[in-house]
View 1 (cartoon, helix red, strand yellow):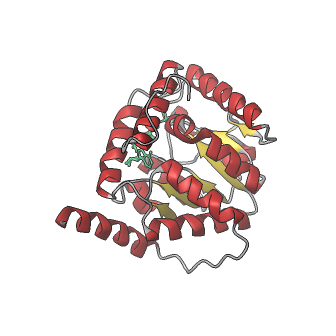
View 2 (tube, protein in one colour):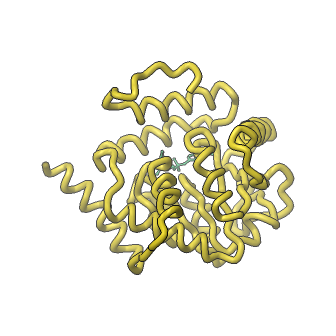
Amino acid sequence: MEGFAADPSHPRYASLLMRHRLEVAAKRGMLADSAMIAHGRGEAFDYMLGEQTTPNARHAAQHALVCLEQAARPILSLNGNVTALACDEMLLLADHLNCPLEVNIFYRTPERMEALLSFIEERRQVLDLEVKVLGASPDAMIPGLKGPRAACTREGIFESDVMLVPLEDGDRCQALVNMGKTVIVIDLNPLSRSAQQATITVVDELSRSLNTMLAFAQEERRAVDAYDHQANLKASLAWIADAVNR
Ligand code: PTJ
């Protein structure tokens, strides 16, 4: 990546690369003011998880992919951090699912929306994908939320039945669940309100979990055990507790 000099053999290479992506995105005006705080909290949890995909996170990601594949109207939602950290993976997943992406941000300004939409369009062209990108012209509101954070499109989020919304805020996650949707969250913090309230939570780093889904999408023979939300969250907490005790 342009301007990124770390050697891939560096033990913290992946972490440094993600930080660099956020720095680039911040310069382009894509991020919320609190984006780095959210990222730092995620990093702290990832450190305790050993910066690896746990068996239960893999299972949750595989189950999430199957739900998205079986959906009538799946949608993938991108905020500032998600666009900065894993735009390509989200585009590739949307292409696999043949569904749109929607830019839907919590701290919404016209300038940020423009910066995010133009970045995604650049990456879409580089990857040469047909994926439709929604969000520029919201025409619906998520019920139960006040202000610009409720704005969404009818064609995308509003009418969707299964929604992947990584790094989501707790209030909005609850509002989306209240709409009757299957809400899939990716969040390194198993104690966050979003992680608790979602239908499926992948407790893993964003790009790792998306790559788990993309790899699973290519597997020919697939069998996924039933998903138990509370057991999944407990397994993530147990993993962290074990790491702390060691
Ligand atoms: O772009 P906007 O305006 O929609 O704002 C995006 C942020 C992320 C700033 C906003 O949604 C926010 O403030 O989020 P929170 O409430 O801080 O929650 C973010 C959650 O994501 C936290 O629980 C973090 O642990 C988690 N997280 C952060 N980075 C990652 C992560 N989870 C997985 N992978 C990451 N890379």
